[in-house]
Amino acid sequence: MRRIFNLVVLLALLATAGLGYYVTRPLLLPATPFIFDLKQGSSLKSTARELQQAGLLEQDWPFALMARLFGKSTQLKAGNYALEHPVSTLELLEIISQGKVSQRQASVIEGWTFKQFRDALNANTDISHDTANLTDAEILQRIGATENYPEGLFFPDTYYFSGGSSDLVIFKRAYQTMQKRLQEAWLNRATDLPLQTPYQALILASIIEKETGAPVDRDKIAAVFVNRLRKGMLLQTDPTVIYGIGEKFDGNLRRRDLLKDTAYNTYTRVGLTPTPIALPGVAALQAALHPAQTDALYFVSRGDGSSQFSSTLTAHNRAVDQYQKRVHK
Image (tube, rainbow, N blue to C red; front, side):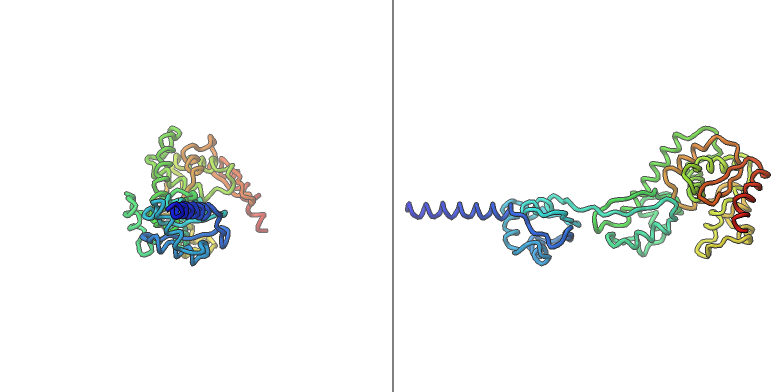
């Protein structure tokens, strides 16, 4: 009996030592980073088998046994995981039972149109494309937006998400972020602006976003448009005309385009366009609601991204002659 008892103790010690070695030894990564997915509803057995087939585990059954011994067999979380360095088997179990998923990202650029935003998400292979067959209006409805037209409603930023997340989640976050930023900017706006609603501020910010070549000029460009709105002058800004042309625009804005009346032609219609023309960033929002103190009514590109500002048409024509006409001679 004594010998049997000693044998049992020895076997228990060996098993404990073996388990300790198994759970603490570093796993060799087949690649760095090692990226793998756990699908929703995956069982412990199938997860262990997939990790073995991927080359991370030598055998699947010890991992499954360990997960049961530690009470983690029903706690595995679906998602996309990335191992940047070797981990122990126990650390791997903790990672997937706590759902420490890797973060993917999608960047939305200032000045993009909603179509460009949507195209970028459609091209992102880490996203579940639940909006593929939805119209723009249906997307707005799904994310709880009250507006009927999507342009300008989404905040340009970098959005992080777990692999396989729905594109609707990103649309909703970008929409809610823009709503928050716009309301904050509107509440802190300068006094006596010729803007009646936050949406008008968003429209103006989108125009400023498309017209700004050098960030240092942004508040002065905003001032020109604000001054023109106060005086009832035409805004006469090319990006709005181009937006009105849409996909037919071939990169060359012609005189006939400036004369053809559309809802977005600020050479033929007084005031703001009916909707934004792009996704404005926070700097454009701030410029629209805090324009520079200047009486400038005109600006022209110097050809290096910056602009020359003028308060009179005579001075503006001289600037056009200096910076534009001579460039084309």
